[in-house]
Length: 233
Image (cartoon, rainbow, N blue to C red; front, side, top):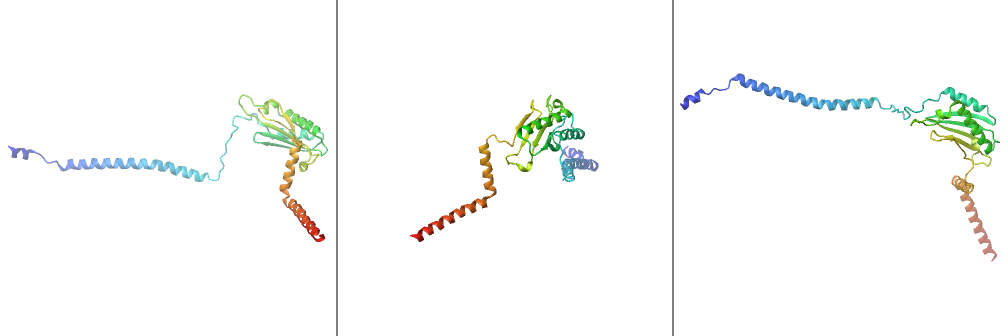
C-alpha cells in the first residue's frame, strides 16, 4: 500500500514551474519600475529648480509693496503743472519736483536774501500750489486702510551756505497719516549753544593737523623762554 501511495504522487510539471518563474520576474520588474519612478520624480523636481535658478540669475526680483495703494496715481503732467505754478511765485529762483516711491518732494531754491519768516510763508504758498493740483484729501491722506502719498516742500536760499548765519532752510511736510501739514525751520537750531559746540567739534575733526601745529608752537615757545631764563642766571 505504501508503495502505491508513493507512486501515486505526481511531480510538478515543467509548465507550472515556468509560470512561477514568470510571476516572480513580473513582480521584480514592477518593483524596479516603481522604485525608478520614485527616484526620478524628486530628481526631476530638483533639476527643474536648478535650471530655473540658473536661468533667472542676474534678474532682479520685483515686488509691489504698494499694491492696492496710491490710487489715484500722480501723473507727469500734474508734476509739470506744479512746477510751473511754483516757478511763478515771488522770490523763487529754481524749482525741482521729484516723485520717489510714495513721497512727492518739491525743492524750491529761493533768493539768497530771503528770511526765515519769508521762507516759511513761501513753503506754505508752494504747498498750496501742490494741493491746488493734487487734492490734499485725495492724494495725501490715508483712508480705509489704503496708503497714499507723503508730501514734502523744501525751501532754501543757498544750499552751499549751510552753516552760515544767513542760511535758511524750511521744510513743510505732511505724511498720509497726518491731519495737517507741519512747518519746521531746520536751519535754525533749537539749542544754538549745542549746535555751535557740534560745529566746533566737527571743525576740529576736519582740521586735526592745524590744531596740532598750534600746540607744537606753544611748546616750542615755552622751551625757548626757559632757556633764555637759564642764560640770564
